Length: 344
Image: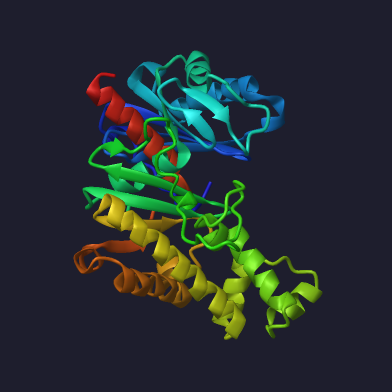
C-alpha cells in the first residue's frame, strides 16, 4: 500500500458506502469509499488473466468482501459496487466484447458474474471513464462542471464527464479520444489499433519510444545512445531524465509530444467545449512536481492558444490529475453512487 494513501475511519465516514473495482491487465484494485468519495480501505490482487474471466470474477467478488471487512463494514452496509474495465464493451449489457489486454475474455458478462460472486449490485464502466469520474468527483476536476481526462500511457485513454454523466456513446465507444485523427497525410503514423493518423500514434508512451528510436537511427546525437548501449530500455522516463539533464533530442521529443497533444485537445474543445482538460497516467513527465512537467503543460497550452477559438483557449482549465492510481476505483465507486441515487 502506498504511504501517501490515507483512509477515513468508519466513525468519521458518511453513509451510504460504495465499493470500486479497477480491473487492469495485471492488477485488480478494490476499495471502499463513503458518500463523500473518501477511501475507507484498499487492496490489490493479481488479475491472472490467463485463468479466464470467471476465475477473475470470483476473485473480484472475494476482494470486494475483503475490502468491506477491512473498512469495518458489513456487505449490507454497501449500496452498490462499481466496476471499471478496459477493452471494448457493451456497457448497458455489462458485457466485455473484445478486451485487448485480457485475451480470451471475449463476450463475457462480467458485470453480472462479479455481482453474483460478491452478492451486491454492480455498475459497469469503461476504466478511463471511471478514472475521469474519480477526478471529477473528488480530484482535480471537483470544481468543474464538465471535463475531459486523458490518460497517457502505453496508449491514450480518455473519459468525458458532463455534469454527473459519463459520455459512453450509443455503442459504448464514446470518449475514444486517443483515436482522434491529427494527421491525414498519406504517410501518417499507424496507431496500435491499425488505423493511420491517430493521436495515440504520436503522443502515447509507445509512440514516444518509437519516435525517439527513429531519431537515433537517423543519426541524431543524444545522451540516450550511451544508456541504450549499456542495456537501458528506451522509455518515456529515460527520455524525461535526459531532457532534464539538458539532452537536446530528448527535450525535443517531449515538446513535440506536447504539440501533438495540443492539436488533439483543440479538436476536443471544439467538439465538447468542456470546462477543463486533465492529464493523467505514467507519461506526464513528472507533472506539477517537475520543471519538465510544467514546461510540457505550458507547451500544450501554447498549441491550444495557437489553434483553438480564442474564447475556449482563454477559459479552458488545463492541468494534471491528482488522484493517481486511486482515480479508477474511486471513480468506479462514484459511478455506482450515481446509479444508486438515480434508482437504476
